[in-house]
Image (cartoon, helix red, strand yellow):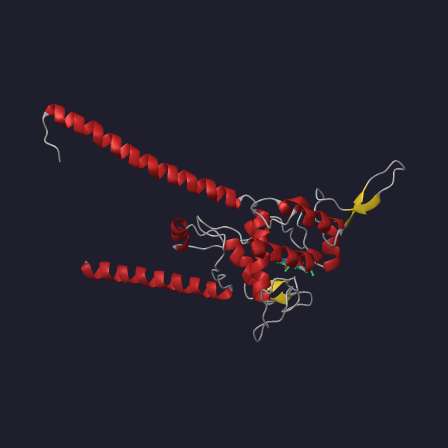
Length: 284
Ligand code: HEC
């Protein structure tokens, strides 16, 4: 009997190990994006203004050639974001032309953009972009929230404790840095590129960033790594513009609950000590 149980146990252990192995192989297929440090992670995290401004620059000079963003210029001046000045936003908008109309003659016309206009990108709509590029560039407004990957057991439990919620950011950062030569024996069709972190490894977007592509005015490193960190931070803000406010309120609630808890303890002690005194239980 004991022997039988032991062999059953052994079989179970072996099949578990096998399952673990095959999972490890899958993981090898598309590696998990490594966790990055983000200034805005955790309960006290905030955005770095200068980084958001640089990230917007990268979006504007590189990504907006294909991806839409769909936020109005004026949000770039709102608290909790890149916090450009109103004057900067006005000047920035005026650099763009947008279609408006129809006018009295029933015709569409072009005018300089206003802060209330959406930041334009290279195409009028995603269909036009897809037709020109050969693949559909996903809209960027909520990309940092929408793109994610399975963290799997037990990581997802640990994530609750550490409040890790930057899967989308880590994923986009990994994609931007994940272009490689395809391994021997892997052929990539024309129009596709090999990317270590893209599920299936084939991505229609050509490597969008290279060193020294964007000139920073603040002396930050002009590397793919830095561009990727900056643009991902910017996209995080675009996807979650009230992050800072929410974290601030959350913190106040926690402080309030803490104070409230101490008060309750005190009141409870006080009430019960009076009761104890009345019924003659000595103080402890
Ligand atoms: C030349 C056009 C082009 C440029 C420039 C470009 N992209 Fe893309 N991007 C695409 C296309 C097309 C896809 C769709 C790829 C696919 O489905 O295989 C894509 C997909 C993506 C994805 C999604 C990958 C996924 O999981 O499906 C991310 C993230 C992304 N781009 C980020 C960026 C960032 C950040 C920039 C700017 C630094 C940028 N892209 C610049 C064309 C572009």
